[in-house]
Length: 502
Image (cartoon, rainbow, N blue to C red; front, side, top):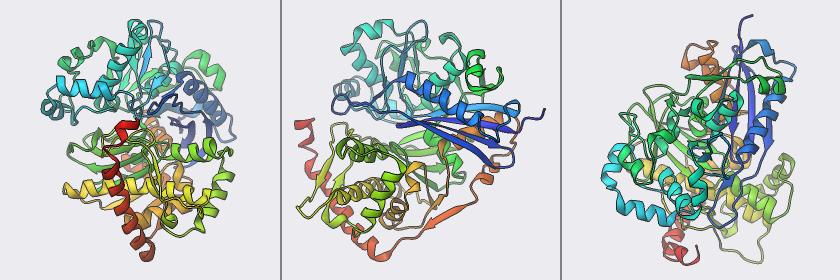
């Protein structure tokens, strides 16, 4: 039987999503299983790795049992996920504690200590970044100081999608793998020579033995295990690839292949990526290898985006966070003029990564009056996320990098209001794709390429033909120019106060 289908699974901040695709460029089925981000203390961001596994199994089973799936024709499976989420495993491969997510901001003291102890210019030259809260080293140092009993049992360190891949394969820790971009974003890996930097590892009592071998995204690293195959209805032995960082897979799935192509990703966290044929670096941004060999992505990541919407609607207003509720909020917020009648939100509810690199920053709702309603705050949150994207675009342009095309992807683009706000705030047309599943489409294509059903990278375009373009409205853009200036100034004025309440 000829293989003609592939499956992608994305381990997102607020849910696990699976998609089934075929060689003809069709998305045959998709299914999402929600889970929660936990923030038990200010700035913390944790998740339960076993929730990812159960979600992946449930989502995988759902697409396999969809009418168009042909289990015997599935060529390969790929998993994408947040980077670099940190999962600590014991000698039997079991998680020792909740993951510490990439947008966690607890390790302020550890960032400061390691910044003082490690030559930052050397670190930047070798890894493409200065010490920051996203790096693995500060989070590990926090574990060593605060949970020494956990560290004493730790034998293997994995990322989110690496862990799920290992569980789907039912393989022991000694046979696990790490995908390339987890290693790059760890801050412990040489960007160019692609080896672990042992002097940096020593700073946090590490050796390379804690890390499995590093693989390119399309490398086949395992096969689907017999127990899992029975649970989901697929034949055992289907190849599993190393997978992809979620934002990189999303960028690839949106067609970012040429220099200057730019994506804004409306996920649980907010990502912005700029495509280049050279390994560009910037002190206020991160860098990743593209899923296409020889290309790179200069990128930024905002700690809270869609998760902030979910927090406000679900935790604060006590509403069910589903499509119908969010649509109703969109409809109400669309009646409010651009600028939310003076309400401005700083979206730093988990601190902020790029371009501020300030884990002690905090969320702010500014300009409230008795005339304002929940819909005003909802709209101001949507605007705040786009202000964050505009801040990144300013950084790129100031560095001489000119975005040639802006594409929006992931769950937030289902909101027509959010898409229109993006075009108005950024001031250029924003292209999105109706029904585009983002990261899981990208990693499904990678699986299909590894499984032999795709041969050319450009074949991804078969899946993204139905484009939606939002053009900026000049009147709204003028209002947003004024509000954006206040947004930027608010952080500057409050920056010294955040540490006093963090």
